[in-house]
Length: 201
Image (cartoon, rainbow, N blue to C red):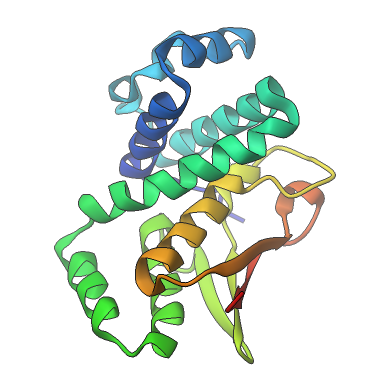
């Protein structure tokens, strides 16, 4: 099984959003206490890493956040994910921008699956990393690669950034509330990380 990969673009957007959420001083303090390189606060310093190394840095930063904030990390990382969505949209490829435009023109009841497929396009480093499945009226987004959980174990799901991205993408597409729950996580010993989307609150 190949190691998870992450695009440089996605790691840069994550670090930029995390730095905005924490502020420079707190971000530096978190890196120091976690014994992570101080230069990681500047996303430009990671440009020389390959995609496997980028995924490891992504996982290490989120693990450091969970250690630094404890239970409070969930709320911070959810917000980071929500704020990342617009950044991912802003610098998407021409093809994905076109797909996003089409989604907004679809009938409301068909936008959800297409939006989740767009999320999968944004977050996948290679084909097959993420898949979307229909569960009657609900949906399941399966993250087969899951760089967040790579090399880490926890009794609870840990992919809060991905959950935040999914939540905000659906708000963007439909202006309606959704329940997004991580029902399986590799960090917990599951085969994949899986996010169940329940439509209509």
